[in-house]
Length: 242
Ligand SMILES: [Zn+2]
Image (cartoon, rainbow, N blue to C red; front, side, top):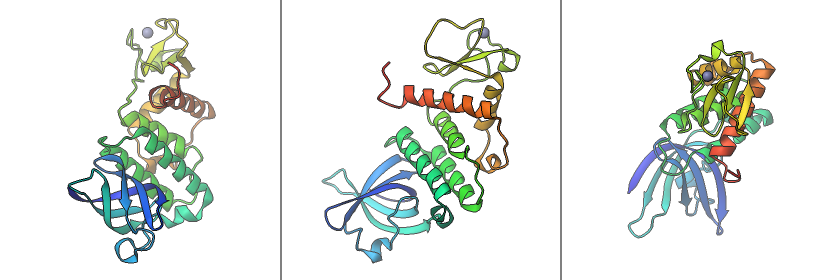
């Protein structure tokens, strides 16, 4: 199989003297690993494009006798130089790349996640002042769109809208919301402000370009953090004792 795609490199590592393995986010096949034989020295085939946080057009193939993906040639499309110059933005970007590697698996349909990741990075590249909540919003939006879509709008038992709830509870094992009346005994709940649920609904249909100008209340960010962390811990991390 031969293919050619623009992918985002999430990690690289060396094996043998001149060879590299490269993990990347593809727009159609999730997170993948390819091997660049001679990648450390071949200027002609890779011309310095084999680094984390590079958007690269790869030509790759899998041989008839092996299932390994061999990277044959790469052309740098965007290296996000402004992000790489700024430790603060670089830290945010790397944090988000790691998270993407965690939620997205090989073979996943990754078209939405790929567009979100690139939008997010292009906004960080263009704006020197990126709010500190950016990675949190990225994690929330990424996990909600990539196969773990929770229902925030209303109580899953009685259907009451969160706008009419004095108190709201997020059941992170089910990814659903309950009002106080319908809540049953469970240790796997988080008490959240109903306004935080409106915020998360808004986040779902927003883009990173809008986030730059957002002003978010600390208690909303706190709720958002707790919802995302508990949800990811339960559904994605293997370490959670169920
Ligand atoms: Zn209810």
